[in-house]
Amino acid sequence: MIGLADCNNFFVSCERVFRPALLDRPVMVLSNNDGCVVALSNEAKALGFKRGNPYFKIREQAEANGVVVFSGNHRLYEDMSGRVMTILRSFCDEIEVYSVDEAFIFVNDTVGDFGDFGRELVRTVRRDTGIPLSLGFASTKTLAKLASRFAKKYPGYRGVCVIDSPEKARKAMALTAIEDVWGVGRRNAPKLRRQGVTTALQLADMTEDRVMEIFDIVGVRMWKELNGISCISREIVPPQRKTIRCSCSFQDEIFELETLRTAIASYATSVGKRLRRQGVVAETIEVFVATNRFSSCRPQYFNAFELRLDDPTADTALLVAAAQKALDRVFRPGYGYKKAGVTATRCVAADSVVHSLFSDSGDIERRRRLMAALDRINASPANRHALHVASMGPGLVGLTRREHESRLYTTRLDEIIEVKV
DNA sequence: TCTGGGGTCCTAGGACCC
DNA sequence: TCTGGGGTCCTAGGACCC
Picture 1 (cartoon, protein in one colour):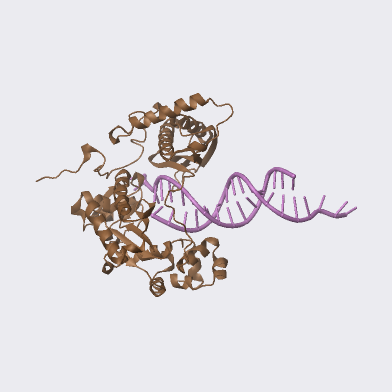
Picture 2 (spheres, rainbow, N blue to C red):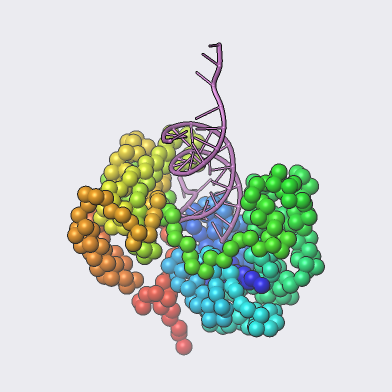
C-alpha cells in the first residue's frame, strides 16, 4: 500500500496556526507581487473565489466579504512543511517528499489497520504542528491521490480514506471526474470528454490501444496506475535538480538597465545559494526579460539568452558576472520590463565535474571555500544578506509588492508570536 | 494602477555520424 | 539517369505537476 499525505489548504493553514482567530474565516494567500490567489480556505472557496484569480480584480469583493489576505510567506511555509515531514518520517518506513505540502508515505503491513494508523498520524500532525492533513491509501500512487481527495472532501472519513480492494477502487473512480485524475490536465480533459469519457472509471475501462491512440505513453502509464498496476516509481532520495530558476515580476515596469542589473544580481545570488545547497554546479546560465504580456497597447518584447560558463560553477560572483553578460545580450532600451529571471540550466553534481584543461584548480578550491564561508555567515535568518555582491544594491526591495506580509514566526526570534495573558 | 513561480517529462524534427 | 540505411544527440514546444 502507498499513502499520500496532503496538507489541506496548506499556505492558509500555516497562517492560521499563528492566527487561530482565523480558523473559521475566509482566508487567501497571494502569489509574489500580490498578483494572484494561490491558496484559499474553504470559506473563501465557498464565496466563489478561485485559485488563479488576479487579486486586483477581486480585491473589492474580497474586502466586502471580510476575506483576510496574506502575501505569500514562503519561508514560513517551508519551515512548517519541514515539521510536518519530520512527523511523517517518524511514523513511516520511508517517505517521498513530493511537494511542499504533499508526501507519499510507505509503511509495511505490521501497522495493522491502515485507517487506524492513518487517523493516528493525522491526529499527531494536527496536534504537533497545527496543520490539517488528508491521507489516502491505495495500491498505486495515482489511486492514493484519488483516495486522499475523498479524505479531504468528505468529513466522514475523518481524514483517511483507504482503497484496499478492486471494488472500492471502481466505486471511487466512478465518483471521480476525469479532470480530477492525477495526470489528466487542462488540455486532455476536454479531449477525453469529447470521446465520452467523463469519469476516472471510464478511462480505466478503455483498452490500452485506445488510450495510446488518444494520449501517448504518459496516458498509458496513468491508465495502468488506475487499474492497480504501479508504474510510477518511488523516489525516496530526491532526484538531482536539472534546472534551478529564480524569477520575479516587478511592481512597476523597469526601463533602466541599471535597475534590471540589481534584480538580475539578486536572482543569480539566490540561484547560486540553491545550487550549493544541493551540491550541484551549473554548466550554463540563462537570463530572460519580458514586458507586460497583458498590456495590449504597449510594444511587447521577450528574449532569453543562454550562456555557457567557462567552467561549471556554483560560485555566486561568477554566476552574477555571467548573468550580467547575458543580460547585455537581451536588453533593449525603450521597453518597460515587467519580469526577468535567471536559470541555472544543465546542472550536474559538483563532485562529478571535469574542469577545463586550462582552469586553475587552486583558484577553484579557494573560491569554493570562499562560498562556504559566505554561506556560513549568511546562514542565520537574521543575517541572510550580510555578505553579498555589491551589484545587488538594495536587491528586490521596492521592486515587488508585499502589502499583506505575515511574520517569520518560526525562524526569527524578533518575529515570534506574542501571547497576552 | 494592479494578472505567480518553479519544476519535470515526452515528442518531433533537424543535425550529424558511420 | 541514378541519390541508402541506421543510428545518436540536441532542441523547442507542449503537456503535466505543485
